[in-house]
Image (tube, rainbow over all chains, first blue to last red; front, side, top):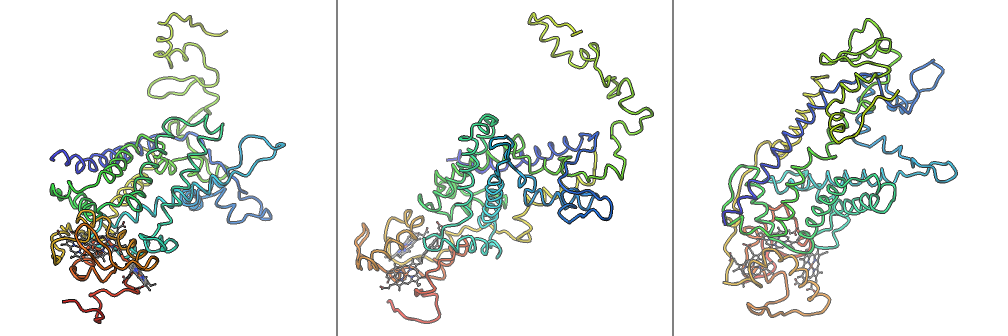
Length: 334
Length: 130
């Protein structure tokens, strides 16, 4: 059964794609210039002494790098801007509906996933560190009544996932803005969660071989054919989907875990009035940008303000020629 | 690339997070073939088929608990023989410390049963088997 070694190679391939892909995406983002200062703010800026400014205002409208960093932490760990989610369409006599349940289920889902990932360390470490055992114990205190104890994190993750997916399926407007890729990643999550819970509670499998397999992956110690042959089909489904998901991450929306650090509306201090923001690709303009006839990028001149046909054609030459080939007439609008 | 120091710091943090299994154990992860280390049980057969037992022994004990406590069935017949419906039945053939506990420690499973039930790994003797 040498083909079973595919399952041993799979995680390395998936991780290589994940690491290289993620670093590539990060570097791509790092290369993007931010020409303008665009923090979105929801608090009071520093003003006259008598204008009250609480610490919440400092987070929501940071005036220096330190508070911008604090705001970033609030964003990453508490989903601050999602907490301000109010319905963006007017339904009830012009009043915004409170839709912060989205925040609730999002935060439940993410933190449950975190706990689940940490709990899985028990398969990848030998001996298992104390904090992993403690976490699993705490996770199971509410559910000790059954054997094995019902772990709350998986139940919460499943319920939250049902809400997050249900939102994209049953709410008309959300359904309409959902792309196939949104459903794909939620589907992956559902398969992984359900197969994992099935293994723990219903279709019992021999976990000792699963742990030996996991240890062989992490210690780069190829498993014996005996271990591979004892792996249960349900485990193989669970494992394969985890690998596919990991390899898919760099191509997916899940990259928001890295992208959030790059969002200019979150990571820029709101100090437009104190410090001049220098446009990185136009650092020392002699003439202000709007007063010039064009900006030079990569040796090409782009006209600002009003685009004329020649510049427009120059910019979109490929597409315009392609359209023209299909017998559409293209003429500048006068 | 803009903000180079921050970006490099971020990438390093990302890689460090991925290497978590190594640093939480201080690099001390050892591969172990647990099945070679378990003490050999007495007898030839387990209560049920061995492969089934390895995956389902907790379910079996759970079922036995209900049989014994709720239905008063104290003796059961399986394909391999007749057994007392009791946790102590396991100790006829299995060592606790070098069988059950060994595997459970490897798997990081801590059954709550021993808060009330006896097992031969405990320092006092309550049940004697030949």
